[in-house]
Length: 70
Image (cartoon, helix red, strand yellow):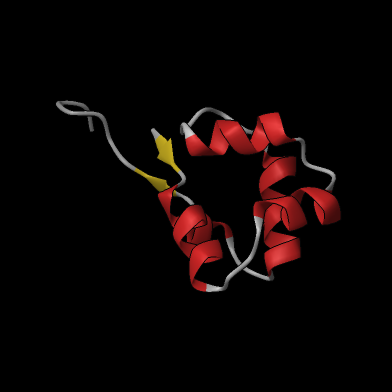
């Protein structure tokens, strides 16, 4: 499972507002909500976020295996 807690930590540490990400990337608020609840988003979305934040995917997301699965 991909989790996005790093995304929220990243923008909080840099004092970046969600509304600014939405405005500058064209990503919808519904997609941002998907990030908050660790739902699937496209690689295009990840690319837009990384371009805006000037970061790499590993800076904003992480793979966590489900309990008992590897």
